[in-house]
Image (cartoon, rainbow, N blue to C red):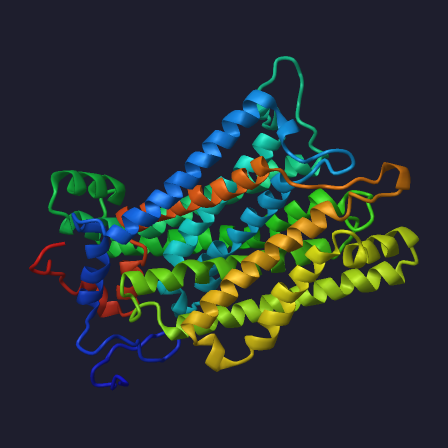
Amino acid sequence: MATSVKDNPKIDPATGEYIVLAPGQSFRSVTGKIARIVLTPRTPLGWLALFGVGGALATLLLVALVWLFLVGTGIWGISQPVAWGFAIVNFVWWIGIGHAGTLISAILLLFKQSWRNSINRFAEAMTIFAVVCAALFPLIHMGRPWLAYWLLPYPSTMGVWPQFRSPLMWDVFAVATYAIISVVFWYIGMVPDFGTLRDRARSKFGQYFYGLCALGWRGSVRHWSRYETASLLLAGLATPLVLSVHTVISFDFAVALLPGWHSTIFPPYFVAGAIYSGMAMVLTLAIPLRKFYRLEDLVTERHIDNMGKVMLAAGLIVAYGYAMEGFMAWYSASRWEAFTMWNRIFGPMGWAYWVLIVFNLVIPLTTLWSRRLRTSIPFMFCISIVVNVGMWFERFVIVVTSVYRDFLPSSWGSYRATRWEYTTYVGTLGLFIAMFLLFVRFLPMIPMSEIRAMLPEARIEPEKVEEGGD
């Protein structure tokens, strides 16, 4: 049943639209609903079951890493000429997953898009946890991860410095900067909510923990002014990272001389692909969360529809990148480029190319034009899974099919991932699930302060802890 204006007297000052709340629901009840998820002493059985699955998969990751350190990278399927395998594929895929958090949090904040308020918090958390999973792969791919500090410009008395002309070195600085800004942005955004949880917590430990995290937040005019200033400054710093991080990741391939990698289309192509897969992962997480915690009145069909539009726009840019790859392979008049493109499509691993075409282009770009489908929750959940799978295969095609058949036919080889590579990848999925579930259980997944701050009077509206127990 539609909600009347009389039932919803709150207006979004950015868009002029009425903020849709359930009948009889106030900003105070929204705060109580979100805080209750964190402060309840009873953990849902579904959460425990899923956390058990994530923990079990993360244990598999630990087993795979221990065996890798004991035996070496020979347990993987990498060889000559395929020296990069699942490790780099998964690294690029996880970094791409983390892009949607910065897009939603920073860019949409600068453009004053209020619909971001319900999804930006867990999108930011997704970014941080995806970067953690991504950072594992370059370390273990080194073969000697205990020497990883050589990648940092530490004070070396021996005068041995990193090779700053290597794009792999650029990755270290780009990803580290991205991670630091993302963590700071994420934490600063939660400070007002920590103050709310501190005031609502009933246990001494909860009051102490959330009070410590709140940094003395009292909700005064001075605190709000500094909070908004810090948010805008961090958004301005984080916005260039959306372009720079995955651009630098693309340089791992673009600065090489190999056919299929030496391409100037890679930077914007990688950035668009990262936003495409990242927004798909936000949908993959948001849809089950809104159902499990009954947040349909906060993460509405409008949010799902807008994320579908962003995916459609990013998917069209990705499609343009695919077309340009094929066109430039022909236009360059290089038989090596032409052969690499032909081999991607019709070679022994051509099946992977057709999987990415169907999953990234055919299915999403023929369906996301329909608003009826974009507001269909089951369909959008399925399409998010399809895009995530398709974007993984895109990274696989770029990394593997460009190197397993290079200039010399005598050096051609093949690549087949081993069970240890599959175990490592599945283990990072478990690690991601476990970290994300811990975030959902102990931290506010939806920013209460930003929803309240959509109206000036909501900031000074006194809050009352509801009877019945958080």
